[in-house]
Each structure stands twice: as structure tokens, then as C-alpha cells.
Image (tube, rainbow, N blue to C red):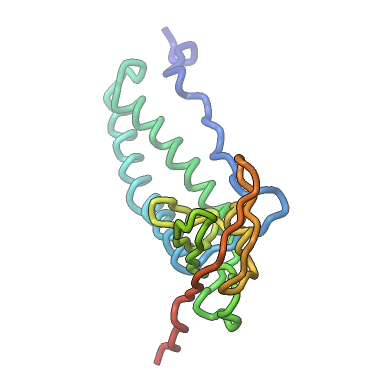
Length: 188
């Protein structure tokens, strides 16, 4: 039977691109470190992962029947995943607006990049760092600048009590401390 009539795999359909996590019309603020991580991942995919996968697919394609060739089928699927991630990273980097928190002049208020310690009504303290959407990591206390907690804290000063909207209803939180990274020294 001619290869024109044989479908290599049901998985050959293009996978949808990764879903946009940024609301429409909202800037994609990101710290220099976060932007560097996006660039590093992009470079790794372009220079290491993709060429390696292309080599495997090319080798597997030369082995004959592709319909039952696991290396070929998995390789093509992995190549689509890599290409999808590359497209996503490219869009994110193009839309990124790098903001260096160490350059913040007004350090007595909460802005992007601040590490904030706050206490809730039960006197439980929590420390969070306000970062870009692509940098959030709840395990490390890194929250998005568009999250409800960050929105409540933005522009507050130490001692301010702000209202936090939660699913259980409004809650008041008090800003206990605000810390920014030290200003960067210019390279000699």
C-alpha cells in the first residue's frame, strides 16, 4: 500500500499552543532573572533538545516502516512539543517588559519585585515576593503581580492594613516588612 494512504499516527495532529496565562491588555512584567531563565530555556531547546530530537527522527525515518516505529512516532511527537514550547517562549519574550526591582527608588512602598512580609487577622505571618506571571512559584513564596494578594499589597507601606478579597470573603492583612534587592553596581 502506498504511504500516501497510511496515516503515521493519530498523534500527528498539531497540539494546541500553550494557553496564555496573561489577561488581555496586561503587560508581561518580568524580573531580569526571570527573563534570563526564559532565554536559557529557549536556547537549550533550540541548541540542544531540538537538534538531538531531529537527529533521532531522521535516523528512525531511515529505518523503514514508520507506522510501527516507536522512535519515529515518539520523536515526531516530542518535536511538536518542543516547537510548541519554542513558539510560546518566543511570544513571552517578545511581550516581556523587564523591570529590575533593585533599581526601585521608592523602597518604602510595595511595588513589583518587592519581598513583603504580611500578617493576617490570625497573626500568621507570610513572606512573598511579587514577580512576573512566568516566574510564580508558590513553594518559594513567589507570587504573580496580578494575583489577589499582590494587588492588595501594591503601593502599601509598612504598617498599612489592606483588604484582601478571598473566596471566603474579605480579609484584612497588615504589611510588616518590605525588602528590595540591593541596587546593582555598574560593571567596571
